[in-house]
Each structure stands twice: as structure tokens, then as C-alpha cells.
Length: 636
Image (tube, rainbow, N blue to C red; front, side, top):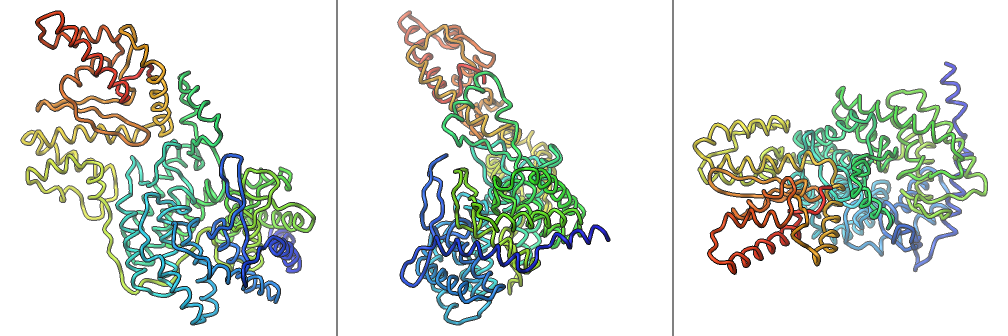
């Protein structure tokens, strides 16, 4: 009882909330720009590591749509003619400026989100017609190559689902299916679970809600529930399996980014590589926020547990809550004025998760931490303190929802309304599609994308490979074991099948067991630098090595291939026999002149001039192998 009393004492009064919100609105009024009958804001855009500008942006994440959404929710819960006027003007500007364009929470498609909230409240036919006309501009929107929530296809799907939930428009339903099938086709399988986006500047595909696997998995939860398609829920589970392996390894979800944000970072990475230091490429960072870390991942598991309650999701949710509580306790000891308070990667976003998960799990400690933070925040807003943006640019304010002032206001509204305002960091789709959609689990597409040569060889021999996989088989190890067994059963009679499988198995292992995408990427950069520096003075005394990720393969059918990993993708390159022998010569390191003499013995020459010509040709092939990164000066 004493604990509950302490929580009640920490709850700010209604008047305290209203005073804090008044300061935020006053700031938005002071920074608003007028255009016709509407108003808009200029938010921060980073143009370099420490360079930025202000510009008018549309998006929910960092633009005018997010500010309009905050003002709309404010007028619903705090009746005020002044607030309503500002909200109406923000919508007028939005209605006349939305243009079709980019995807995700940062794309122009997200700018329709507050308009739908406005219509759902008012059910005004005129507003509906305006929204439908705007939506119609997005008919030609196509899936892109990026799949995350913030800038990719998953973020677009959340908005398409909200559109269809509200208006039941047929073309939107078709667009949902198009984007969903594209995400399914783009799914990549790891040794554990699945992922989507890969980059040169990461250790492995990212965990987390904004740019990582959790956000995409979350969208599959919403898709599976709305479309009544269990296979889509299964994809969400695979995404969460991928992230769970990192939790088991580190006891937290690591930040796997390895981006060169500063100009000197790339130089430092290359220097480390040349010294043989691998740690900078394989040691993850740590961040506990909505975008990267436990709070955002926890929101995904909270939704998963609500939809499909099982012990694994519950365990993940509890882990996310404990990690987030520990991070909040550490943040409490730092000067409040110096802290990031934003939704994206600040304390408001983290505390919002503690509030929602703590309420769901009835966790008293979480709610106590929420109460203490709310008091600190309201006290901070009560003074002349700056409300700093979420950007690393010092004391500058930003009006936006996820990176600035509007988001802090949105958080306060959620606290004041006792979570009756929807969580914009994890938008939920309610209702259900009028017709079920069957989108098959991508077991076969997994084989088609990773073992195309093997499957082609089976097709050519008129062997049906579809019976390799049971319906809805989602265990990667099981799928691979079935393929291996299938190949071994036919391989002695069909050597072409066995050969293709041997090559693609090595390729699969190279890609999945790659210690770091960034390490492979910087090896490529170092190889290019070495070649530029040494190609003019290349001599016979130079020792060369095969690239550390190069694999050579030959078969009884006298086919020769090289498999070479660059960043996160391994290429299979057919070779002539002589090229194969050339690369084999350097596998343990060899001087160029020694290699030339060995290779020349494989050829029949008659005269000295022919021999000299042959040596020149071999030297030229060695240069080409260096340029193609098959041969390197150092085995980094």
C-alpha cells in the first residue's frame, strides 16, 4: 500500500499538465510561419555530421504532419479556442501541400496520418473527400529497396493499413498486398530468424524499431491480425527470433551500427584494420531508446504478447522493461537540462514505454520512475529552460513530433489522458479486413533466393524440389537439412546438382558467418587503396595473398568458381582453369615471380620469346586479380 501511495503522490495535477502544455503551444505559436490561411513550421534537417538547416517538411516523424497530429490531439483533450485555431491552420496548410513521394514515417505518405485522425473524430464528408483526393495521388507508389519503418516499405504499410481501415478503398487493399508480398520476397534468412535491410556500415542487420528488425516485425503483426493471415504472424516471430539471439548473447539488444558519421571515422577504421585490430568492427554499441534498443523493441513485444500471448514474448517484454528501467535510473542522475527529452531517442520515448508496459504488467517500480520523470519534466518546462532538439547540434529547438517539442507535448497528453491517446511510436490498426488474404510463408522463396543454381539444376533434371519443405516450415535449420538430404539422395546420379549445392552452401556460410559487414566493407576500401598505391611499382618480389574471404571450388565436372564476400553479399564468379590455378598458388602467400614460374610450367613454350610473352600475360592476369580483390597485399 505504501508503494501505491508514493505513486499517487508523484502524479502531477491537471493544472500542472496544462501549464506545461501551454508553454509548448506558446513556443509553437511563436515559431509558426504563415502561408495563406494556414501555418507551418520549419524543422531541422541535418546536411552533414555537424551541418544543418531549417526547412519546411511534410512528414509525421520530423515535419508538419507530426505537429498537426499533436495539435489535433491537444484540442480533443484540452478545449481552447486558441488551440483549435492553431490546429485548424496547421491542417489547412497540410491539405494544400501534401504531394506524393517517399515512403515510411519520414515520407510524404505519412502526412496523411493526422488527416485520418481528424476524419475519424469528425466524420465530416468534406474532409473525407479531400483525403480521398490526396490518397489518390499515391496510387502509383511502388515498393522500394529499403524496408524499415522510418524510411521504408514497412512504414508505408502502416499508413496503407490505416487508410484501408478507415475508408475500405479497393486500390489501397491491392497496394497493401503488393507491398506485403514485396516484403516477403525481400526477407533474408540468417542462421537464426530473418531480417531485411543490410548495409556496409553495420556489424549485422540492425535490431530496433526505427531502422531495425523489430519495426518490420511489428508491421507483420499488424498485417497478420488485420488480414487474418497466420503466415504473416509467423514472419513477425522469425524477426523477433533474429533479435532474441542478440539478447541472449549480450543480455541486451546491441546497437549494431558502424557508420562513419565523422570524416575521421573512416580513417580510424582503416588504421585499425591495417593494425590487425578487428574489435572496432565487431564490438557493438549500446543505446536504449525507441529507435535503437529496449524501449522500442519492448513496444513490439508488448503488441506481440497482446495479440498472441506466449511465454517467449512475455520474457522478451520483461527483459525490455528491466533494461529500460535500469537505463532510466542512470539517466535520473544526470543534469536534467542537458538531457535529450525527445520521443525518438530521448527520455520521453523511454518513459512512455515504461508507462505503457508498466501499466500492462502492473509493475510498480516502472510507474514510480514514470511519476518522478513527469514531475521533473513539468518543473523543467515551468522555467525558462530550453527544449533542446534530438539532433547533436547543441542548444537548438525543433518543433517536430519525434525529434522535438511537439513530441514532448504528445507524451504529456498521453500521461494526462491515462494512455487514451494512441501511441504514435507503435501505431495500431483496429478492425479487420473484410476479406482474408492468403500470403504463403516464404519457405520456397528462401531456397530460391539462396540456392538458385541448385534448384535450377534440379529443374533441368526434372526433379521436383517443392516436396523438400513441409507446409509452413519456418525452421531455417530444418529447411537446410531437408535440402541437404534431398541433394545427397540424388547427387550421385546428378553430379551437376551436387556441384551447385556445394558452391551455394559455401556462399551461404560465408554470408551468414561473416563477422561484420563493416569489416568486409573496409577490407574492400583498403584493397583499393593498396592497389592504387602499389600498382605502378608492382614487382616480382611482392608477396600477395588470396583475399581472406575468397573460397575456391572445383568439381569432377571440371568446373571452377571463386566465391568472394564483399560487405554482406558473396559473389560466385566462374573461372577458367588457369585462373583457378593462379589464385590457388597464392592461397598461403607467394611472391609474384615465384608464382609466375610455377604457373608457366603448366604451359608448353618453345622459345625464350614465347616464355617472356607468357610471363607478361601471367603478370597481367595477376594485376587483374589484384584489381578485382581476389589477391591482396595484406591479409587484413
